[in-house]
Image (tube, rainbow, N blue to C red):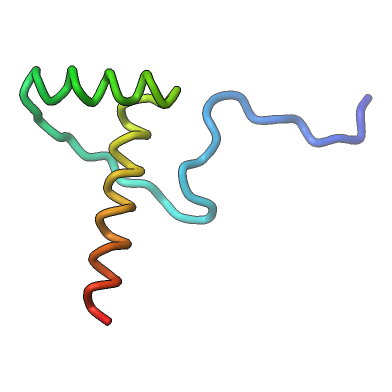
Length: 66
């Protein structure tokens, strides 16, 4: 038997020690196609591309409050 802990199957958590919230975003087919193309270029999924974009917008918003 191994002394290393068993690795959990599936995707890793999005944020350490924080629960996640599911959302639904509706976009036009054209916007989705553009997001899919950009995500593919960056070797990302569309949800990860959206998470990064949202994080960037929120970081910029925090800078404007200073």
